[in-house]
Image (cartoon, rainbow, N blue to C red):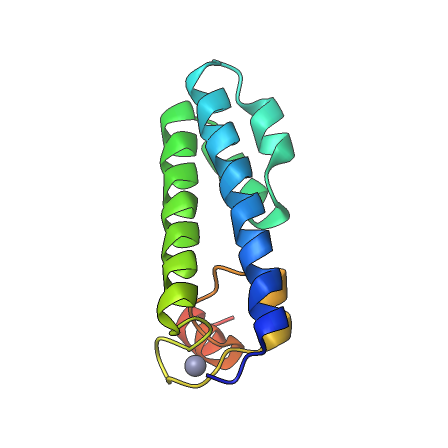
Length: 116
Ligand SMILES: [Zn+2]
């Protein structure tokens, strides 16, 4: 494990914030027919995929998956396996983790697996 305690504390703070936000969005999505406001609050990443759906069930589904990713990232911090690429077992770039704390693969694996 090569990450500093400060780095992990920062990541944990971000994840907890995101979890709050996701929980709130799920709650909102369950209570409204109009999901456009909620999509407006989503992160750029999420908004991109949500914009294509326009359907509440799919929205809730996506948010629940986001929530699962957040929970499992928090769990990985606890058990010391956070930030390790699931494909190549190398540490994931800190910059990438700060931008997207739920990342579970490094940039080069992500690129080779998604073909981007
Ligand atoms: Zn990798």
